[in-house]
Picture 1 (spheres, rainbow, N blue to C red):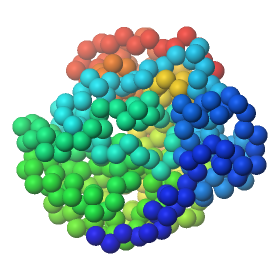
Picture 2 (cartoon, rainbow, N blue to C red):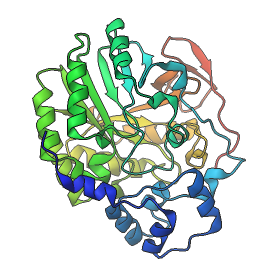
Picture 3 (cartoon, rainbow, N blue to C red):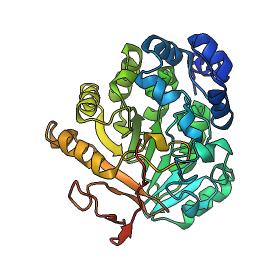
Picture 4 (tube, rainbow, N blue to C red):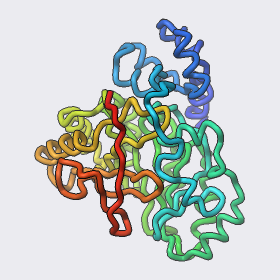
Length: 357
């Protein structure tokens, strides 16, 4: 499968060293930030670093991708596995939380390190959920024909070469129960060179082997977009794939109806179908992005008054402990009672943090 070298070159020249990054930015690197980067390293492509430098240290992009002392603050308690990945880790690289679909974790590598990432602790130690034994993976899927959709996650699955993706897609296409394929990725926005002719040709090749092939593009703020990544996204929306959006509601980044409205208007103009708006997970090292569920509901309530229903994302929350992803407007109220209805139809209590930054 033909693969462009431009994206691998861009990937390999990314900033991986906190000292080199801050020298490039010409910003002060404090001992406290150095300490944070030892626990949660940086990884930022140069083009993104250039945008951060222009927009400044208080910009949305800086807050999303640069370390902050709060990541190691012991008062901001969070969970290493906030959504219960390990509870539903049923086979190598497979998390089978929902009956009809399974998460596939082929890589720990991303094109950027998001400071709010719900898997930031698992990725840091290359947790067992990433350990490979693809023969056993396929055996599990054949023994569980109820699984009809494979969701490539990670890490970022588009870190894989086109050749590697082709091998995985070929194997999954030979499991008769697998009908749908989905990718969740930061690449189209963060490192758009990845959307090369080889990748597009690969998706076209497999469109007849699956019922659907879907790509969910992760973006949190309109400032992440520019003409280069818009052009890459237009290639995707002109393809045979379904293109969806995925956004995390984050304190200090997009925690207002107006900011989200601008983002969803961007998605709509790019012909990306709004799909998920995630309430932030209670992840260790990322609690400075957390906001109360009631506040999130109020923001979402304002959003749905301003955009049509077909453009409204599902506002969802992962209940800690592995109970799964459910509607965050559940029950239907902005006031939070302390309980939510699980995917099994049972009431589950959830304890929110007693601090909000």
